[in-house]
Amino acid sequence: MNILVATARTQGARANDYHFCTEGELVWIGLMCRRGQDDPDGSCGCGRGFGGLNSHKATTTAMVADLPGFTRADYVLAIRSSLADQGWPPSVAEEIADDQLGLARQWPPGTVIERRLDYVQARIMASGKT
Image (spheres, one colour):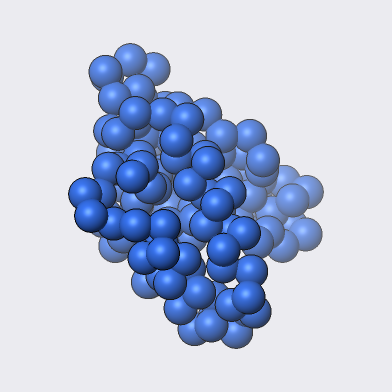
């Protein structure tokens, strides 16, 4: 099953990159504040980042990974736990999981992606191409 994980690969390709997640931790596209929505390249950064499910920190680069044996139920549980830890309603975990899994299915494992608001694109495809 393809899933998104934090990666430092390609960090620095953009001047406003950041990587505060734990390398390889599960990530998701979280909620955005008004500043992030108004200017994804601004100082907030939530309009261009992926949130770590465990560290609750963020990164501007995520990688598609195939985690053998990891199931949708495992992912829903990880999201539910992360939401509860952060004070968000865990009842939306299944919907978020399905959205994120649909996103990860678009690319082969090893692809590094970035985002600007709702636009997500590959920085480096698994084949090494940009």
